[in-house]
Length: 367
Ligand code: ATP
Image (spheres, rainbow, N blue to C red):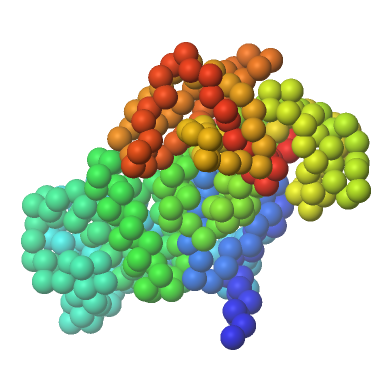
């Protein structure tokens, strides 16, 4: 069986936005597909909310084109677009019932009452709140309120649901649960969801693809796995998870491999397939390696492709995992190594000299 080709639903071309002399978006090109869970991820002020509001029709681009479902959205007001925005749960009206909250948009569209009641119940069932329509909104828990906010968007039958940090007001445990619920609901409905978030964990766990934004530009648009394993630059690498950076330089090509000298770890020949497109080996100055890709070799039986030596300078115990700070020769900053606390593994105390295993495959090159 072949996987069907993704079908674009939103096409963004050359989008810029200026507020006075300040340029908030500096040329955004992206395609978002039907049925995709897509996230705009970046630090505060990078322009992600501005971009979402433009897709919704609350903001106009200074230049560029927004196509939704093959239609140019220039001049199309928010209420005529096949999109609907989910706001944070506190944006629901506390004095109205759940059903009145959810049916608000349909009432504004002058839909007959009986039909509104039917559509509201259908939307409430989607978010597992069936039968709770008569409740006052202020009687609901935080998670239930968030689901009302979602039902209020879904009742309008949008092709694209836009979510602006919808979970940020919830506590950590509820947020984790809602992330799973939202993702499951999106997959069940098959509607495109676009999420704005500054929380990399949230983006990684929920999205099919993520656009990482800095200062009005998309730095990388990729799947969560690609972003984590092959970040395009040091900024993306540091924003997504933890990355150890080590000085490195290329010493030359050898038989389809790139010879690398990494003073803190040793020398290695990297298969050329691992060299990212566009990277100039002459300008290579560092490598990145994730904490779980470095291994403390606990006894003589554990093996690794390459072995360096380091000194444990500190430990942080998390129950299932221990994070080690390890000093490698000639490297000023300690690296972080994460180790699973499996049976029989005791914690290595600070001051111990340990063999550190690593391998070519987990190395990311930066220039
Ligand atoms: P946050 O997570 O803090 O909301 P963001 O990435 O969503 O950040 P935006 O809200 O899109 O960022 O804002 C991008 C930049 O544009 C910010 O520097 C912001 O101050 C500026 N900006 C946004 N809206 C306006 C406006 N109406 N007038 C002037 N400047 C604005």
